[in-house]
Length: 414
Ligand code: SF4
Ligand code: SF4
Image (cartoon, rainbow, N blue to C red; front, side, top):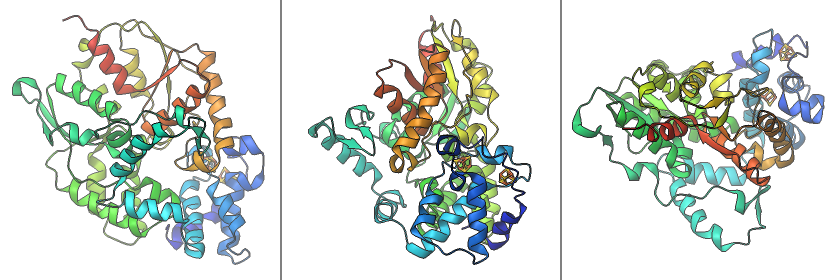
């Protein structure tokens, strides 16, 4: 996937080892092959024909959360995540994609795919199964209740504010997780925007942003998703396209232009669309009228930084400022708030024990500060944290930042 010239950056690694302690997986297993440095050296060996692709190398390549923690500390400015995707891509070229991923990518996540149908099937079948059955280490009873109607079917394509006075207009890219698994996040965002007098457009027929395909080293379907979404988003009149999923936002904003460049294609449309993409916390933090709408919420809340929002996009202060603006809310900062939750897309399903061990560190930090609620800016983090917390019957709620803002808005005396 990365071009030959990008892959040449493996030679920039000075083997300093600063990335080792930053890597959540290395911290768990203490194996050099699991470390960012180890993976970079293996890719180097592969490129110099000193190593052959092998199932063991494939397994090593899959042991990465693509959390950007190593890139954040690397003195050589190595984009280790891109190199690891490159390593995975080499494995896909040698061995093909695993059948489960091939089926899911081709039939569920490609443009016009049936992800929504699969979710509805899971919704109907899950209650019929014994609760002790586990899906990739997660008990069925700990999975979130699945909605009957996806977000885009709950609303018209264009949602005008009540009274019809439109102060501004934005588009919203919900992404698969919000559209089909957590539509209540989208509903909270829409009600906040409506209260601010902002028209919302949810474009129809969007495809998955492609994050699961990109991080798996798949290129063929990814190129179709990318082209499809660029055409849809590029033709919108809206100057701002909001995202409430950190991974969708990062992929649309940064990885689309990167991929077009790496594929040697014209990246101008991807750059243009990328410039329109804005995380909801950045957008809402600039909305002056929002603070006046919030009522008291006397609760103790902490915030978990999604890797793709904090480390990949540098968005750290905006969500905190928004949360601190809620009257009577006791905002407490936990230790290592930007440490990965252990999700990493399919990583949590392939390596449930390591994922749970990483999540447990996060849960300890959440408990240390006595939080009743954890807010975050990504539905995938919400999924990982809530399955881990529910497993312990902790009673701690995990919500998206926009949900808690909307809850506070409901507490405002009218
Ligand atoms: S921090 Fe960067 S330069 Fe140092 S070992 Fe890790 S990848 Fe190599
Ligand atoms: S991206 Fe995260 S999990 Fe992957 S090697 Fe770097 S620090 Fe480790």
